[in-house]
Image 1: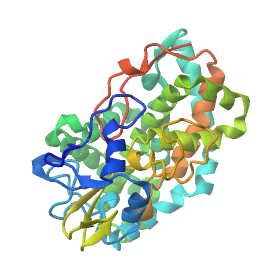
Image 2: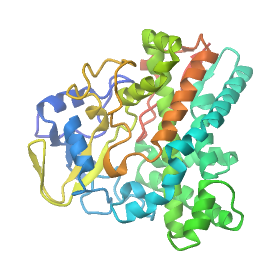
Image 3: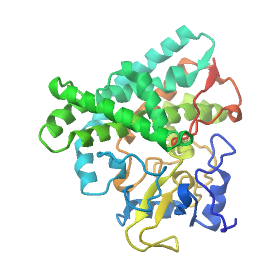
Image 4: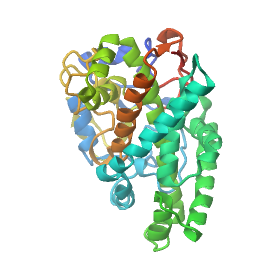
Length: 396
Protein backbone atom coordinates (compact mmCIF):
# COMPACT_ATOMS: atom_id res chain seq x y z
CA UNK A 1 0.00 0.00 0.00
CA UNK A 2 1.59 3.25 -1.15
CA UNK A 3 2.35 5.98 1.36
CA UNK A 4 2.62 8.68 -1.33
CA UNK A 5 -1.11 9.43 -1.27
CA UNK A 6 -2.70 8.61 2.10
CA UNK A 7 -6.14 7.02 1.73
CA UNK A 8 -9.18 9.21 2.28
CA UNK A 9 -11.66 8.66 5.10
CA UNK A 10 -14.27 7.27 5.10
CA UNK A 11 -13.00 4.38 3.01
CA UNK A 12 -15.17 2.62 0.47
CA UNK A 13 -17.02 -0.50 1.59
CA UNK A 14 -17.49 -3.60 -0.53
CA UNK A 15 -19.90 -5.33 1.85
CA UNK A 16 -22.73 -4.01 4.01
CA UNK A 17 -21.72 -5.84 7.18
CA UNK A 18 -17.93 -5.66 6.93
CA UNK A 19 -15.48 -2.76 7.28
CA UNK A 20 -13.61 -1.57 4.18
CA UNK A 21 -11.00 -4.17 3.20
CA UNK A 22 -8.23 -1.56 3.38
CA UNK A 23 -8.44 -1.51 7.17
CA UNK A 24 -7.23 -5.11 7.49
CA UNK A 25 -4.19 -4.39 5.33
CA UNK A 26 -3.35 -1.22 7.24
CA UNK A 27 -3.79 -2.99 10.57
CA UNK A 28 -1.18 -5.58 9.62
CA UNK A 29 1.29 -3.49 7.61
CA UNK A 30 1.00 0.07 8.93
CA UNK A 31 -1.23 0.09 12.04
CA UNK A 32 -0.54 3.79 12.63
CA UNK A 33 -0.56 5.52 9.24
CA UNK A 34 -1.54 8.75 7.55
CA UNK A 35 -4.98 9.38 6.05
CA UNK A 36 -6.45 12.31 4.15
CA UNK A 37 -9.37 14.44 5.30
CA UNK A 38 -10.90 17.65 3.94
CA UNK A 39 -8.57 20.56 3.23
CA UNK A 40 -5.50 18.37 2.90
CA UNK A 41 -5.49 17.52 6.62
CA UNK A 42 -3.47 14.30 7.07
CA UNK A 43 -3.96 12.96 10.60
CA UNK A 44 -2.87 9.55 11.84
CA UNK A 45 -5.19 6.55 11.60
CA UNK A 46 -4.97 3.97 14.41
CA UNK A 47 -6.27 0.51 13.50
CA UNK A 48 -5.09 -1.96 16.16
CA UNK A 49 -7.09 -2.69 19.30
CA UNK A 50 -4.29 -2.16 21.81
CA UNK A 51 -3.24 1.14 20.25
CA UNK A 52 -6.87 2.29 20.08
CA UNK A 53 -7.34 1.67 23.80
CA UNK A 54 -4.10 3.47 24.58
CA UNK A 55 -5.06 6.60 22.64
CA UNK A 56 -8.62 6.78 23.96
CA UNK A 57 -7.47 6.37 27.57
CA UNK A 58 -4.65 8.94 27.33
CA UNK A 59 -5.65 12.48 28.32
CA UNK A 60 -2.65 13.83 26.44
CA UNK A 61 -4.91 13.38 23.42
CA UNK A 62 -7.54 16.14 23.41
CA UNK A 63 -11.14 15.84 22.19
CA UNK A 64 -11.57 19.59 21.72
CA UNK A 65 -12.51 20.18 18.10
CA UNK A 66 -11.77 23.90 18.40
CA UNK A 67 -8.02 23.21 18.39
CA UNK A 68 -6.19 24.02 15.18
CA UNK A 69 -5.47 20.86 13.23
CA UNK A 70 -8.22 18.81 14.88
CA UNK A 71 -9.30 16.03 12.47
CA UNK A 72 -13.01 16.81 12.51
CA UNK A 73 -15.71 15.49 10.22
CA UNK A 74 -16.02 18.85 8.49
CA UNK A 75 -14.33 22.25 8.32
CA UNK A 76 -15.64 24.83 10.80
CA UNK A 77 -18.00 22.53 12.74
CA UNK A 78 -20.75 23.96 14.99
CA UNK A 79 -19.13 25.69 17.98
CA UNK A 80 -22.09 25.87 20.36
CA UNK A 81 -21.50 25.10 24.05
CA UNK A 82 -22.42 21.79 25.63
CA UNK A 83 -20.81 19.52 23.05
CA UNK A 84 -19.54 17.06 25.63
CA UNK A 85 -18.24 14.71 22.91
CA UNK A 86 -15.81 17.49 21.97
CA UNK A 87 -14.71 18.58 25.44
CA UNK A 88 -11.87 17.81 27.81
CA UNK A 89 -11.96 17.91 31.61
CA UNK A 90 -12.87 19.83 33.68
CA UNK A 91 -15.83 21.07 31.58
CA UNK A 92 -16.48 17.59 30.19
CA UNK A 93 -16.53 16.14 33.70
CA UNK A 94 -18.78 18.91 35.03
CA UNK A 95 -21.42 18.51 32.32
CA UNK A 96 -21.32 14.73 31.98
CA UNK A 97 -21.99 14.33 35.71
CA UNK A 98 -25.26 16.17 35.25
CA UNK A 99 -26.48 13.48 32.87
CA UNK A 100 -25.26 10.32 34.58
CA UNK A 101 -28.25 9.79 36.93
CA UNK A 102 -30.58 9.32 33.96
CA UNK A 103 -28.33 6.75 32.29
CA UNK A 104 -27.35 4.49 35.19
CA UNK A 105 -27.82 0.74 34.80
CA UNK A 106 -30.63 0.81 37.39
CA UNK A 107 -32.48 3.67 35.69
CA UNK A 108 -32.22 2.01 32.29
CA UNK A 109 -33.41 -1.34 33.64
CA UNK A 110 -36.52 0.43 34.90
CA UNK A 111 -37.20 1.35 31.27
CA UNK A 112 -36.99 -2.26 30.04
CA UNK A 113 -40.76 -2.92 30.41
CA UNK A 114 -41.53 0.38 28.71
CA UNK A 115 -39.26 -0.53 25.81
CA UNK A 116 -40.92 -3.95 25.64
CA UNK A 117 -44.36 -2.36 25.40
CA UNK A 118 -43.23 0.09 22.71
CA UNK A 119 -41.67 -2.79 20.77
CA UNK A 120 -44.85 -4.87 20.83
CA UNK A 121 -46.99 -1.88 19.91
CA UNK A 122 -44.83 -1.11 16.89
CA UNK A 123 -44.87 -4.73 15.72
CA UNK A 124 -48.67 -4.86 16.15
CA UNK A 125 -49.01 -1.70 14.08
CA UNK A 126 -46.57 -2.97 11.47
CA UNK A 127 -48.45 -6.22 10.93
CA UNK A 128 -51.83 -4.50 10.92
CA UNK A 129 -50.82 -1.92 8.31
CA UNK A 130 -48.58 -4.11 6.17
CA UNK A 131 -49.67 -7.76 6.43
CA UNK A 132 -47.06 -9.12 4.00
CA UNK A 133 -44.01 -6.86 4.14
CA UNK A 134 -42.72 -3.33 4.66
CA UNK A 135 -39.72 -1.07 5.15
CA UNK A 136 -38.49 -2.07 8.59
CA UNK A 137 -36.61 1.22 9.10
CA UNK A 138 -39.74 3.33 8.64
CA UNK A 139 -41.99 1.13 10.73
CA UNK A 140 -39.74 -0.27 13.45
CA UNK A 141 -35.99 0.35 13.69
CA UNK A 142 -36.30 4.16 13.50
CA UNK A 143 -39.45 4.86 15.54
CA UNK A 144 -38.47 2.64 18.47
CA UNK A 145 -35.18 4.35 19.48
CA UNK A 146 -36.50 7.77 18.54
CA UNK A 147 -39.51 7.30 20.79
CA UNK A 148 -37.35 5.93 23.61
CA UNK A 149 -34.90 8.84 23.59
CA UNK A 150 -37.73 11.37 23.26
CA UNK A 151 -39.42 9.78 26.28
CA UNK A 152 -36.23 9.89 28.33
CA UNK A 153 -35.31 13.45 27.44
CA UNK A 154 -38.84 14.83 27.52
CA UNK A 155 -38.99 15.76 23.84
CA UNK A 156 -42.43 15.61 22.16
CA UNK A 157 -42.50 12.55 19.91
CA UNK A 158 -45.06 14.40 17.82
CA UNK A 159 -42.12 16.42 16.47
CA UNK A 160 -40.36 13.26 15.26
CA UNK A 161 -40.33 14.13 11.56
CA UNK A 162 -38.65 17.47 12.20
CA UNK A 163 -36.21 15.90 14.67
CA UNK A 164 -35.14 13.08 12.38
CA UNK A 165 -34.88 15.35 9.34
CA UNK A 166 -32.55 17.76 11.13
CA UNK A 167 -30.58 14.97 12.82
CA UNK A 168 -30.08 13.25 9.47
CA UNK A 169 -28.81 16.48 7.92
CA UNK A 170 -26.35 16.95 10.78
CA UNK A 171 -24.81 13.48 10.45
CA UNK A 172 -24.95 13.03 6.65
CA UNK A 173 -21.37 13.37 5.41
CA UNK A 174 -22.38 13.74 1.78
CA UNK A 175 -24.70 16.69 2.52
CA UNK A 176 -21.81 19.12 2.94
CA UNK A 177 -20.75 21.28 5.89
CA UNK A 178 -23.45 23.95 5.43
CA UNK A 179 -26.27 21.42 5.56
CA UNK A 180 -24.68 19.68 8.54
CA UNK A 181 -24.39 22.95 10.45
CA UNK A 182 -27.95 23.90 9.52
CA UNK A 183 -29.25 20.63 10.96
CA UNK A 184 -27.39 21.20 14.22
CA UNK A 185 -28.56 24.83 14.45
CA UNK A 186 -32.21 23.92 13.91
CA UNK A 187 -32.11 21.32 16.67
CA UNK A 188 -30.20 23.64 18.98
CA UNK A 189 -32.83 26.39 18.69
CA UNK A 190 -35.69 23.89 19.01
CA UNK A 191 -34.26 22.36 22.19
CA UNK A 192 -33.33 25.76 23.64
CA UNK A 193 -36.99 26.79 23.43
CA UNK A 194 -38.11 23.47 24.89
CA UNK A 195 -35.70 23.80 27.83
CA UNK A 196 -37.04 27.27 28.58
CA UNK A 197 -40.58 25.89 28.59
CA UNK A 198 -39.53 23.04 30.90
CA UNK A 199 -38.21 25.57 33.40
CA UNK A 200 -41.71 27.04 33.71
CA UNK A 201 -43.61 23.74 33.58
CA UNK A 202 -41.27 20.84 34.46
CA UNK A 203 -42.14 17.19 34.02
CA UNK A 204 -40.54 13.89 34.99
CA UNK A 205 -37.80 13.86 32.36
CA UNK A 206 -34.12 14.65 31.90
CA UNK A 207 -34.65 18.05 30.28
CA UNK A 208 -36.88 19.20 33.12
CA UNK A 209 -34.34 18.15 35.71
CA UNK A 210 -31.59 19.85 33.75
CA UNK A 211 -33.62 23.07 33.49
CA UNK A 212 -34.67 23.22 37.13
CA UNK A 213 -31.72 21.61 38.94
CA UNK A 214 -28.78 22.75 36.83
CA UNK A 215 -29.62 25.74 34.62
CA UNK A 216 -31.75 27.52 37.23
CA UNK A 217 -28.95 27.15 39.80
CA UNK A 218 -26.26 28.41 37.43
CA UNK A 219 -24.42 25.08 37.26
CA UNK A 220 -24.97 25.02 33.49
CA UNK A 221 -25.83 27.73 31.02
CA UNK A 222 -28.94 27.42 28.84
CA UNK A 223 -26.67 27.03 25.79
CA UNK A 224 -24.68 24.24 27.45
CA UNK A 225 -27.89 22.41 28.32
CA UNK A 226 -29.25 22.74 24.78
CA UNK A 227 -25.96 21.59 23.26
CA UNK A 228 -25.94 18.47 25.42
CA UNK A 229 -29.52 17.69 24.47
CA UNK A 230 -28.75 17.96 20.76
CA UNK A 231 -25.97 15.40 21.06
CA UNK A 232 -28.06 13.02 23.17
CA UNK A 233 -31.07 13.30 20.88
CA UNK A 234 -29.08 12.67 17.71
CA UNK A 235 -26.76 9.96 19.01
CA UNK A 236 -29.53 8.38 21.05
CA UNK A 237 -31.58 7.36 18.03
CA UNK A 238 -29.24 7.35 15.01
CA UNK A 239 -26.89 4.73 16.49
CA UNK A 240 -29.59 2.38 17.79
CA UNK A 241 -31.55 2.65 14.55
CA UNK A 242 -28.52 1.51 12.58
CA UNK A 243 -27.71 -1.25 15.06
CA UNK A 244 -31.26 -2.61 14.95
CA UNK A 245 -31.40 -2.40 11.16
CA UNK A 246 -28.03 -4.01 10.49
CA UNK A 247 -28.58 -6.43 13.37
CA UNK A 248 -31.58 -7.82 11.51
CA UNK A 249 -29.47 -8.15 8.35
CA UNK A 250 -26.63 -9.85 10.23
CA UNK A 251 -28.89 -12.40 11.92
CA UNK A 252 -30.84 -13.19 8.76
CA UNK A 253 -27.53 -13.55 6.91
CA UNK A 254 -26.34 -16.10 9.49
CA UNK A 255 -29.30 -18.47 9.91
CA UNK A 256 -27.37 -20.85 12.16
CA UNK A 257 -26.66 -18.04 14.62
CA UNK A 258 -30.26 -16.88 14.47
CA UNK A 259 -31.53 -20.40 15.14
CA UNK A 260 -29.26 -20.70 18.18
CA UNK A 261 -30.54 -17.38 19.48
CA UNK A 262 -34.14 -18.45 19.06
CA UNK A 263 -33.49 -21.75 20.84
CA UNK A 264 -31.68 -20.22 23.82
CA UNK A 265 -32.76 -16.79 25.14
CA UNK A 266 -29.77 -16.86 27.50
CA UNK A 267 -27.62 -16.08 24.44
CA UNK A 268 -29.28 -12.69 23.91
CA UNK A 269 -26.90 -10.48 25.97
CA UNK A 270 -23.82 -12.07 24.38
CA UNK A 271 -25.37 -11.86 20.93
CA UNK A 272 -25.91 -8.12 21.39
CA UNK A 273 -22.27 -7.63 22.36
CA UNK A 274 -21.16 -9.58 19.30
CA UNK A 275 -23.44 -7.52 17.07
CA UNK A 276 -21.98 -4.33 18.53
CA UNK A 277 -18.45 -5.58 17.84
CA UNK A 278 -19.16 -7.07 14.45
CA UNK A 279 -21.09 -4.11 13.03
CA UNK A 280 -19.45 -1.13 14.79
CA UNK A 281 -21.79 1.45 13.25
CA UNK A 282 -19.68 4.42 14.44
CA UNK A 283 -17.50 4.01 11.38
CA UNK A 284 -15.89 7.44 11.09
CA UNK A 285 -13.68 6.89 14.13
CA UNK A 286 -13.00 8.70 17.38
CA UNK A 287 -11.14 11.97 16.76
CA UNK A 288 -8.33 13.35 18.92
CA UNK A 289 -5.39 15.78 18.72
CA UNK A 290 -2.05 15.31 20.50
CA UNK A 291 -1.16 17.85 23.17
CA UNK A 292 2.48 16.70 23.23
CA UNK A 293 4.73 14.25 21.40
CA UNK A 294 3.40 10.73 22.13
CA UNK A 295 4.45 7.34 20.80
CA UNK A 296 1.63 5.17 19.47
CA UNK A 297 2.32 1.75 18.01
CA UNK A 298 5.97 2.60 17.38
CA UNK A 299 5.13 5.91 15.66
CA UNK A 300 5.75 9.32 17.22
CA UNK A 301 2.65 11.49 16.99
CA UNK A 302 3.80 15.09 17.32
CA UNK A 303 2.05 17.75 19.37
CA UNK A 304 -0.67 19.35 17.27
CA UNK A 305 -1.18 16.33 15.02
CA UNK A 306 -4.58 14.74 14.71
CA UNK A 307 -5.45 11.10 15.34
CA UNK A 308 -8.46 9.09 14.15
CA UNK A 309 -9.05 5.87 16.06
CA UNK A 310 -10.89 3.39 13.85
CA UNK A 311 -13.25 1.50 16.13
CA UNK A 312 -14.35 -0.82 13.34
CA UNK A 313 -10.76 -1.80 12.55
CA UNK A 314 -9.93 -2.32 16.23
CA UNK A 315 -13.04 -4.48 16.69
CA UNK A 316 -11.84 -6.77 13.89
CA UNK A 317 -8.29 -7.06 15.25
CA UNK A 318 -7.36 -10.78 15.53
CA UNK A 319 -5.09 -9.93 18.48
CA UNK A 320 -8.19 -9.05 20.50
CA UNK A 321 -10.85 -11.22 18.84
CA UNK A 322 -9.87 -14.63 17.38
CA UNK A 323 -11.29 -15.17 13.89
CA UNK A 324 -12.65 -11.60 14.00
CA UNK A 325 -14.47 -11.63 10.67
CA UNK A 326 -16.69 -14.49 11.83
CA UNK A 327 -20.02 -13.58 13.40
CA UNK A 328 -20.26 -15.76 16.51
CA UNK A 329 -22.86 -14.95 19.17
CA UNK A 330 -21.24 -17.40 21.60
CA UNK A 331 -17.92 -15.52 21.79
CA UNK A 332 -17.09 -13.20 24.67
CA UNK A 333 -17.05 -9.84 22.93
CA UNK A 334 -17.65 -7.65 25.97
CA UNK A 335 -14.30 -5.89 25.57
CA UNK A 336 -15.29 -4.43 22.18
CA UNK A 337 -14.87 -0.72 21.50
CA UNK A 338 -18.22 -0.03 19.84
CA UNK A 339 -19.01 2.46 22.62
CA UNK A 340 -15.52 3.91 22.67
CA UNK A 341 -13.15 3.76 25.63
CA UNK A 342 -11.91 6.03 28.39
CA UNK A 343 -13.48 9.32 29.49
CA UNK A 344 -15.70 9.59 26.44
CA UNK A 345 -17.11 6.07 26.53
CA UNK A 346 -20.74 6.30 25.43
CA UNK A 347 -22.99 7.60 28.20
CA UNK A 348 -26.03 5.84 26.75
CA UNK A 349 -24.51 2.38 26.27
CA UNK A 350 -26.81 0.69 28.81
CA UNK A 351 -29.86 2.17 27.11
CA UNK A 352 -28.63 1.00 23.71
CA UNK A 353 -28.00 -2.51 25.01
CA UNK A 354 -31.45 -2.84 26.54
CA UNK A 355 -33.17 -1.72 23.34
CA UNK A 356 -31.22 -4.28 21.31
CA UNK A 357 -31.80 -7.02 23.89
CA UNK A 358 -35.55 -6.37 23.89
CA UNK A 359 -36.31 -5.45 20.29
CA UNK A 360 -34.38 -8.02 18.25
CA UNK A 361 -35.65 -11.17 20.04
CA UNK A 362 -39.20 -9.78 20.03
CA UNK A 363 -39.07 -9.07 16.31
CA UNK A 364 -37.90 -12.57 15.40
CA UNK A 365 -40.32 -14.15 17.86
CA UNK A 366 -43.32 -12.22 16.58
CA UNK A 367 -42.34 -12.56 12.90
CA UNK A 368 -40.81 -16.04 12.62
CA UNK A 369 -40.88 -15.91 8.81
CA UNK A 370 -39.09 -12.57 8.59
CA UNK A 371 -36.98 -12.35 5.43
CA UNK A 372 -35.05 -9.70 3.53
CA UNK A 373 -36.91 -8.59 0.41
CA UNK A 374 -33.62 -8.10 -1.45
CA UNK A 375 -30.00 -9.25 -1.12
CA UNK A 376 -27.94 -7.12 1.32
CA UNK A 377 -25.64 -5.94 -1.46
CA UNK A 378 -28.59 -4.13 -3.07
CA UNK A 379 -29.25 -1.89 -0.06
CA UNK A 380 -27.95 1.65 -0.58
CA UNK A 381 -25.85 3.19 2.20
CA UNK A 382 -27.14 6.52 3.48
CA UNK A 383 -23.74 8.22 3.75
CA UNK A 384 -24.02 9.26 7.39
CA UNK A 385 -21.47 9.36 10.17
CA UNK A 386 -23.34 6.36 11.58
CA UNK A 387 -23.06 3.44 9.13
CA UNK A 388 -26.34 2.07 7.85
CA UNK A 389 -29.12 2.14 5.29
CA UNK A 390 -32.18 4.35 4.96
CA UNK A 391 -34.50 1.50 4.01
CA UNK A 392 -34.72 -2.20 4.84
CA UNK A 393 -37.45 -3.91 2.81
CA UNK A 394 -38.57 -7.16 4.46
CA UNK A 395 -41.32 -9.73 4.13
CA UNK A 396 -42.84 -12.19 6.58
